[in-house]
Every structure is written in structure tokens, then in C-alpha cells.
Length: 256
Figure 1 (cartoon, helix red, strand yellow):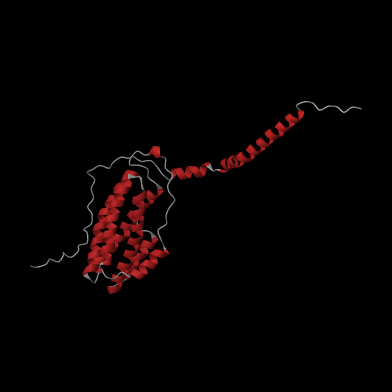
Figure 2 (cartoon, rainbow, N blue to C red):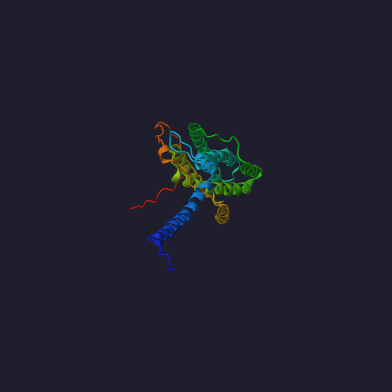
């Protein structure tokens, strides 16, 4: 019995089919992780991230901007009374001068932050937080040189922490009002740092350890839609008095 000859084209068709099938399986394997990742994305989480930054007439306002505005207000709520205590209880002229700088600086800065908060719709606290209340209580109970040391050390530590925050906000904010507030805060805080150090009571070794133990956290960058920003320059007639700068002795002049 003669064997049946193979049908022409059947082997070629079978090989092509195998190649097509293999390509289809490979494509499915490559696409599956992408589809699975898309399915795992949480729309609610994405919405929360976007909601952290809101559009204002002065540019986007991030969660960090709002936190900064709140902290500027909190600083004034306890550092201004601390300055008043130093004016009353300081045993040296340098401590009393530092107290006056704190009162003058935070009177001006507090007026500025309340104006900004009103324009941006940010609610502000009306009293210091728990830790700040503890610091004020300790200063009220301290007397003599113990008060001078406590005042210089705790106020210098607090200003060192906020100084880093001011720089961080000023470098990254997209809101023109927050930038203006950060400029004012930077001038005020630096003035207070210098005048507190001029008291001679700051323990720089302890200060460095305390600042290293609780560094200012770096938040995640805000999620911002670039097309949503509508920057507007603040009114030019808005001005805020800055605290007096610390003075340096006049340069020595040579006599002929």
C-alpha cells in the first residue's frame, strides 16, 4: 500500500501558527503587569494627594504652606509673652534687650501672618500648644540668672528650628503671599537669633545636640497642576514694620 503524500502547505501553516501563538502569549505576559498595576492604583489616594494643594489668587498653596502659616502664628503666641517676661525679669541689659526684640518682632510678624491667613482662608490657633505652654510656665517660675539662662537657651533652640523651616518654605513655595511672609519671618528670626546669642547665655554645645536630636522633617513635594496656578502680585501698599536689627560697634578709625 502506497503511503499518502503530505498535503502541500500544511507544515508551513502549522509553523506560522505556532509563531503567532507564541507572540500573542509574550505580548499578554508583558501587558499583564501594566494592567494589574493600573487596577491596583487607589483613586481615593490620588485625590487626597491633589487635595493637599489648593489654587488661590496668589498661586498654589500647599500643605506645607498652611503648616508654615500656623507655626508662625504659634511662635508669636508664646515668644511674645516670653519677651515680655525677659523685659521684666532679665538681670542684664542684654537679656532685657533680647526681650524687647522678641516683643517688637512678633508684634509685627503676628500682624502680617493674620493678614495672610485671612487672605488665604487659613484658620489660626488662639493659644500656644502644650509644649510652648510648658516653656512659658518654666520661664514664669524661674528667677535671677536661672531665668536668663532658661530664656536664652529655650528661645534660641526654638528659633533655630523655625529658621530651618523658613528657609525650606521660602525655597519651595509657589504662593506669593507665603513667600512674602517667609521673607519677613526670615528677617525677624535671624534678628532674634543674633540678639539671643548676644546675651552670652546660649550653650552652643547643648544647642547642637538638641537640634540634631530633632531635625526639621523634610515633607514630600506637593502635587500641583501647573496649569492651575494664577499668580497675582500682592498689593504694593501692604507693608509691615520689621524689628530693629542688632547693631554692631562702629569701625575703628585711624588717627593721622
